[in-house]
Image (spheres, rainbow, N blue to C red):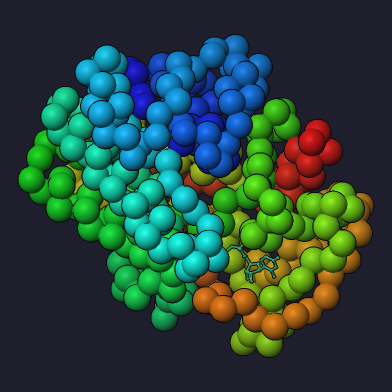
Length: 334
Ligand code: WQD
């Protein structure tokens, strides 16, 4: 089986390529290298012994995508390519709508044209906003998007659902909670461009002395220690969820032609708990200060993973400490 992984040189994409190759799939990566590095291709080979096929294509180039689907016989698509910085999306909404939605439409159109029917989509728990009930299940109400980034995930899911109703495409959207950590080889990991927006890369860079102090965005949330709670999932577990979802489609186990699964650990951790766990796991001190809340942040999110456990036969196996240790090992390699 030959699987196209768009954005396959990115953080989650590269970990998923490793998992696919370990599971015997042939992989071809499309990436425009706007937020990734070609070196990752060779790091993947160092881990699995197999160099994935690679095409440097920007999915906004419709002709190039059309040519690609003519050239390669693809059995399935895992679609990661897109922009993912919440803050940037507020400043540049049209960039996000173009880069996340028109590219999704182009890929789906080419799949339809070339009779490729298995599609896995990188979605996000951001579609739930601040959920009313915790843990969050897949039928929690979809809330108004807090950012254009979040809106592209919501709209992306609608575009996919409508397309599956009118075509032979079968899709699974995985709603990620907070992906963290790195492969145990420390050969691939998160490569944030510039100052990290997300918590773990900032914690790791503070411990490494690259950043001076971690700013904790608010300790006046209605939580036990006042800091916001998230469900931090090891990226290696997250990668495996994509393989489980792909297998479900290939073996026709899907119950409908468009399914959604929450992919998290089911456990919430506060910002302060993460900082303390990092210090304990690595023996490194993290300087921090409490500052104002960040606009758009929600108080608490953690997943009810029972549907993915039952239907995908997938469960997170690695814990917060494993993920934090792997993030630190990756940082030491930089
Ligand atoms: C986690 C917690 C912050 C940085 C977003 C997107 C989600 C996905 C992951 C793309 C929050 C706090 C953070 C810092 C802090 N995006 N924090 N100081 O916001 O839960 O999710 O990133 O795939 O779709 O919504 O993740 O890591 O930015 O923040 O205190 O320097 O850490 O306030 O409580 P978030 P995050």
